Each structure stands twice: as C-alpha cells, then as structure tokens.
Length: 212
Image (cartoon, rainbow, N blue to C red; front, side, top):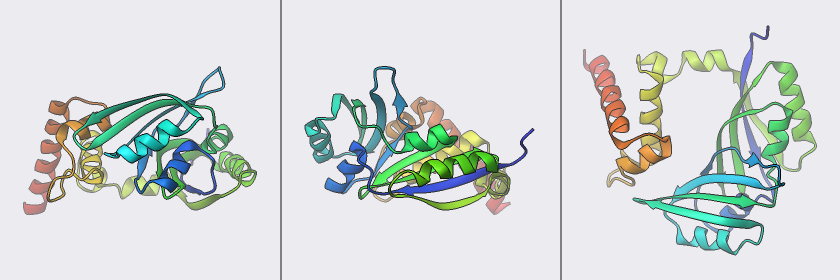
C-alpha cells in the first residue's frame, strides 16, 4: 500500500497549445479542465475566462480549433471545442499526474495536481524532462497541506470551502462585484440556490468562530 501522496505545481512555458498561444495574444487568464484525449486524435477542451470578445476571436481564427462553442453568463465566458494540437499536460498525465487545476496566463500554464508516491513523481519528472519548458515549482506532502487547509482550520465542510474559494477567485466579493452568483455556481457545476446555501452556511460558520 502507498501511504504518501504529494502535491505538485508545474509551470509550462513554450507550449504550442492553442490556449497558451491565445493568452500570449490576449491579456486574460483561462481556467481549464484537463484536456480529454479522444479516439479520433482530437483533444476536447473545456475552459472559462472573464468576458473577452478578443479571446473568442483569437480562438475562432485558430485553424487547429474546431466546433468552438461559447456560453456567456454575467461577465464569464465558458468554452468547449476540439483541438488538433495536443497539450504538454498530456505527457504529465500519462506519467501519473492527477491534475486538479490548470490555468493559462501570458503564454504559460500553471498546473496544480497530485501524485501517489515518489515512484510516480519520478515518472512524471521523466515525462517533464522530455518536454520543453516544463519546470517543477513546488512539491510537498499532501497530508501537511490538508492540516492547514481552511476547512480543517475553520471547521468548514469541503463543499463550503470550495464555494468560498471559487467566489473569491472569481471576484464575487470584490467591490464592485466582478461576477454573479449564477456565474460562480456555473463554474462549480451546481445550481445557484445550492451555491448560495453553501456560501451562507460557510460564512455563518466562519463568523461564529471569529466572534465567539
């Protein structure tokens, strides 16, 4: 049995992935799900960004992208498309990386994930070593990170922590507010009412502990 799980962060530069190239051309951050490689050789890409018609135009003009679909919700755009160009992250996934978040900005990708055991980390590093522009930024035991997580420190449920974190990252707490409850709920894949309930319960738990 493997009893060690490691959290890892990679930075990828000089990737020819359409999303990397799009963020070189447009000043916007893209948050993406891990690409899904299809049997026909195409990658299914699903990602989101703040409202940007320029990003949509750049992606639509890229010959490597087909079937681009855009949905617009209160300042956030969500995209689905097929890509002919495989992303570097595939090499890391094949080596054993479990991707949790994937973000593109200024032509670079930041990959946050986990590996199960140091032997798997070695395989991921070997895959990274064969790929131009991949750098391991950070590695640490996942157990120690879990002990310091807000859900453990403030007695939140994982769902409440996820809602608060997503709302913060998307600008829901900004003044003026940069996104809506519908947009955050859509990002989380839940209903607006479920998001608001979890958010309020999480806020109530935090405030009770802060002021008790």
